[in-house]
Image 1 (cartoon, rainbow, N blue to C red):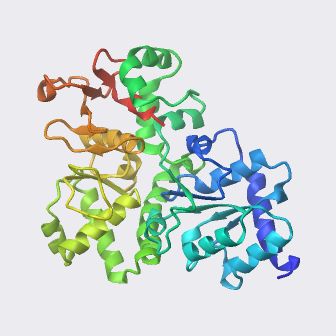
Image 2: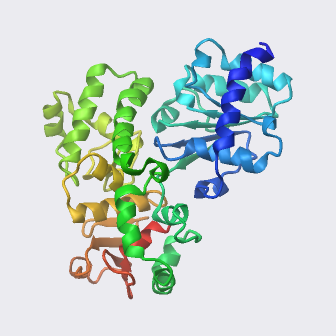
Image 3: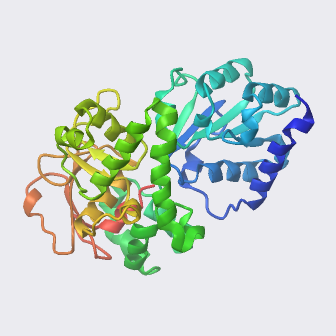
Length: 401
């Protein structure tokens, strides 16, 4: 390989890096142990994985060519080998490689394993838009890599991105204990209910800032792209399965929160119950929908979910979900808590968090009637700025990451 051959990659890298801003960085950045030799960052499309890599390079390398960012969906890789590229770069002194869209490259997991074993002082950070293939790879990278998940933006991150409030994330215990004082401070600095309602419609993904009025159209396109592009690359599924998965998502979107009868769903899709379950869990791992189960979710032993939500409230708006304020509230709570805790369906109440804390979600008139006399039980209440006792404003559950 010659220097001339890699100039297109360098030009793309320099161009992308020059345009990157660093005034807002996702919270996950500071949780990553960047010194690890092999780091994987997985997450849904549009969550900001590419931006995270480029921001890290911009902030931590005084000489930009001490690192290289590449995207494996670049057409350059149709005629060039990743293995040959790394050999050339390593021989010319490169020790920090940032790889985007890793799931687009054939046998990516085997190649990463070989690179890890062949170059002991090479630091590799990779991302995959599809959570699915990283989980589904045939090579065990778990002993070699540090793996992280980038969720959609929290309400706290949205407040920071839009310059409304800059604050540290809270632990769930801090929130439950100190919510009155914390909310009073925030309310004195920001019109929090308006900001919260804006977030519910168009605040879950960082690209909302630049997309403007086209945001929901772009988000609907992302959901379709996950099914049409990521699924076939991952599970070797047929065109017919792709179309059935799109129909399944359409059914769910019109019925959420759905208490599913998987046999009937399978009949509607003209497929088996097992295939229908696989499609549901695929959409769940892609963060397009969220499955609520009685026990902690397992992707190795899939079972029928008790309830199905969309992945976040912005997807509800993008996919034309019928307006139901109760559904929107529960979807928000489930989405924000799933990122930091184990969420399951309890015998009574709406959500059980980490097997201990019981929550009911509702409007300002919500009472404890359904969960009275239950230890560690709380109300997550919409349309209030501050709470009292075990009544906590719903918006505050967006401050956990």
